[in-house]
Amino acid sequence: MMVNEKKKTGLENEQIESVRLKYVKLGYHYLVSHALYLSLIITLFCLLILTHPSTFASQEMFLLTISMGFLAAIYSTRRPRRNVYLLNFACFKPGKDTMVSKELFLQLCNDSEYFTPESLGFLKKILERSGLGERTYGSTALMQIPVIKTMTEARNETETVMFGAIDEVLGKTGVKPGDIGILVVNSSLFNPSPSLADTIVNHYKLRQSIVTYNLGGMGCSAGIISIDLAKQLLQVHGDSYALVVSTENLTYNWYKGNNRAMLVTNCLFRVGGAAILLSNRSSDRCHSKYELVRTLRTHTGADDRSHSCVYQQEDETNEVGVSLSKDLMVVAGEALKENITALGPSVLPVSEQLLFLVTLFFRKTLKTKIVKPYVPNFKLAFEHFCIHAGGRSVLDELEKRLGLLPMQMEPSRMTLYRFGNTSSSSVWYEMAYLEAKGRIKKRDRVWQIGFGSGFKCNSCVWRALKQIDPAMEINPWMDEIDEYPVEVPLM
Image (cartoon, rainbow, N blue to C red):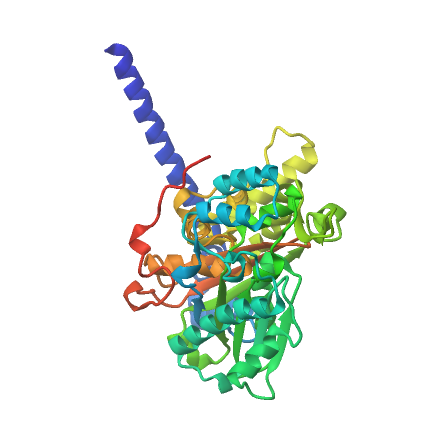
């Protein structure tokens, strides 16, 4: 009994100490974050007390004017030339006839007769560990025996996805196609001529003066690159709407060989796409969902290992596929480190920046591994995280590196489970998940992180302009959101 009581007392003391440390850190964070304002107030107060009564009024006004001018100068230098607003977005949800369970996927692979028994066993193992569920969506052409891998079928797949997402976002916002002045489309591996951007212009009869861009070969992070490009265009073209379309094509990129490094993509990628409507009109702020705070692109392609870790090429039998290197996770981790190092100063509280700098200083000067690297607490900078659902191992690695909680990883893991890896559009399915759950409150900050071949790590930061009411939303999660989250079994 005495031993149990001592253990209980020890646990209580640990809990008390944990609470104390928590509030000490919160106090430190608050003090440092508001140090500039506190120092200005204290300085003003001291000067006013020391001021002679006869000159009190004039000196008080002078100091207040100087202080306000100083703060206004800081604000004006950090403010972008034009604010960019996200009116709304839409994620495409395929029909139930293209739903692919793991069993059906493996059966289709077996019936296609492309793969050896060893490759089929490998596909099964990868699929079991992938984090995908039983209701992801495949391409209609790939569900035929034999597989119909043609340009016509590839166009049909991509056009169905793009037009479905665009129709929905135009319906949500009430914006007419003729009002769109900027169009950015990204599809990494399917780039026909005329381009996908041209196809959209033709289908919706967009105006002749529209500014269009078609991004190819930029991997799963191209969706954030598209947002960054649209932002820069909106800074130049005033009073404009920008439509961003992110998708990928399965039909034209199905790998029919037996190289294991190339087989992985067959297991992970599924059909999906998103359309996002942006505006730089100040009048649109009141009925927009988010304001774009920051975009940041990191490119590590100068390093040969980074450049070749996701590589499209022929295998030994001249079958084209995308090879994933064993270095992928290391490369992704290094790219993430570079990205968050650059992003941190613009989003992290001053308290976290100081801790990071002090730790870095001691590590460099002492040249010792005793002082561990300080990973900034990004949970103080963001309320929500939308990490590209590239695969279970990718999400596990980022959860560890960023020190995130299971609930913060939930949108990414559930998107991977329900829709699979939809490439560049995955971060939008994750945003839709947060909205369907009713978690987006006014002024909440959302961090989208994308990874792509090359190798690239890109970030996009949004601030909610209002609380999102799930009852008013239309997105692919709404009719089943109560089923999630689910426990994804470890294999």
